[in-house]
Image (cartoon, rainbow, N blue to C red):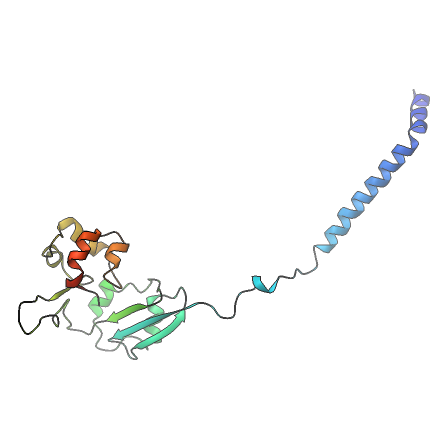
Length: 195
């Protein structure tokens, strides 16, 4: 049997030798490619983070130290906008801030952040004209359940939805947050305000 094995090896000496040579080359290739992985990788310029991150413009007004329009990094929060404006003024309405101003809300370009002063009413009084026929606008951020239900087309359920989706940066968010339908919003939009 041993003799038979030697005859088989002698007969297939060339293919066996080439197989060993191929195996050695494969192992050498694997080993040398493993060494190349330790070299630092280079990235194309397009994949590097830009030095000009996207920014958003935010109008901060009301009871803040330095009201104005500020350029903030995209993804900033209301808290950062208030800090950019120097923080809250001493006369800021702390009750409003605690209840309705979501300091963690992300800002979008063109956002207005208004901080009312202490004693400012929840309903804007400046909307009445000299004729006396017009009614005051309703601030959807501060209006009570009863004030919201007094609006045409708003019942108890919709008023609750408006309250639970606060704060709003603009009245159009009633549509984008799907709180009211377009027909109801079109009837109400002239009597609503946000601050």
